[in-house]
Image 1 (tube, rainbow, N blue to C red):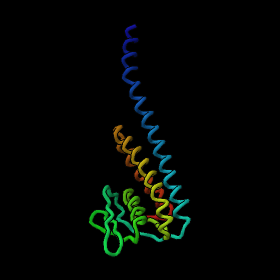
Image 2 (cartoon, rainbow, N blue to C red):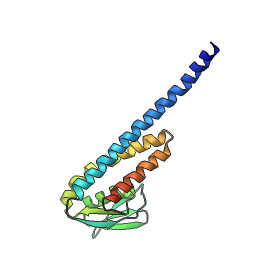
Image 3 (cartoon, helix red, strand yellow):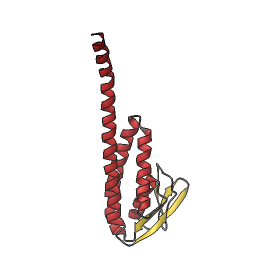
Image 4 (spheres, rainbow, N blue to C red):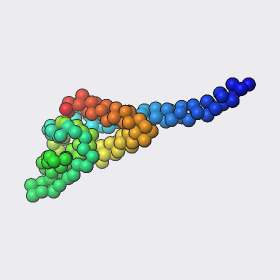
Length: 160
């Protein structure tokens, strides 16, 4: 019977570990679903319209800023500034700067872009929430994997 005590002790040690693992797996699955929803929304709503390609820095920016100038607007990413004709285009580009995309297709019609921006921001925030959940659970690798998966899925659609 002395083995019973050891098994109970091990059970109490292993039980929380399996709960953490299932929580991480659940967060990772939800993050993958969010990535799928973001990419499909971009593909179905932006890429079906006439677009122009805009090159960004290609590095993830945590603090892109929209600046109003005499000639319109600019998106500042780090030390670089990108000219934008209007606020919806700047907001659209800001979403992809937060991801770290090098090249993105932007719809030519700013009214269509304005309609898409809130949904893109919402879906990106979901992805970031799941990523921070994964990183808080000591799974920084999984968070980085989500970021690179999102970038690669967008690149496959024609970006860089």
